[in-house]
Length: 103
Image (cartoon, rainbow, N blue to C red; front, top):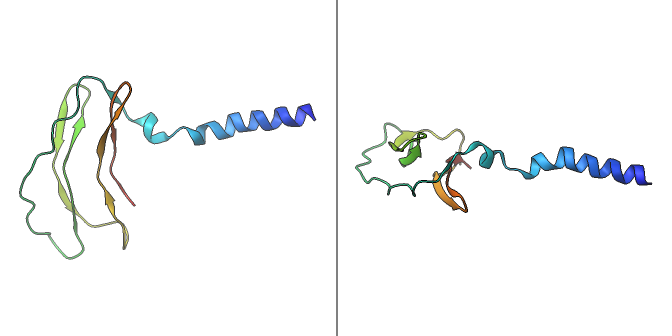
């Protein structure tokens, strides 16, 4: 019985822990200098064709400073997809960019 319990505990540790740790969090650098600057405001213009959606620009960190990534028109990867914009999230040790994604 002890062997079975140890085997289950070991399996949870080896196979369950990576599931609990978000790859998103591990892949993102933590910026400790300052919060990102405000989002820039500009003219969006007309879409280049039917079915295009506007993805807002955002500030990204290049390892030394924030850089502005301009917004753009894109076609969703599938019908009904919704773009979730990137956001900077405050954590205990600094700021982390939660990258945008299609939902």
